[in-house]
Amino acid sequence: MSLEGIAEILGNVAPSVAQIVKSYLEIKKNDPKGLDILLLSMMVDRLNQTTECLEKIKKGIDEMRNHLSEVSDGVKRANEGILILLKRTEKL
Image (cartoon, rainbow, N blue to C red; front, side, top):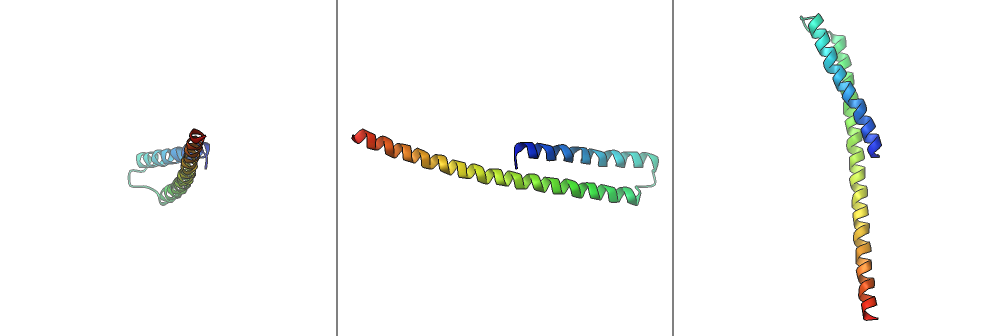
């Protein structure tokens, strides 16, 4: 997953959480006796969507970490190869 993909997911998550809070405050103001079951259901759905998005972000970060580890290993091998070549050229 690219950084753009993660940014897009985060952009989708933040408004969802903000909407949950706004909805809660609106209902609380208009219905002081408590929240409506429908609103609770909507909030749970939004939180589930948010959780799914965060899981995708975590998966993307894990994939990037693995990729960076592979790149790091490749750089180490390249450096070792360069050192071997330098030693051989010094002997010539």
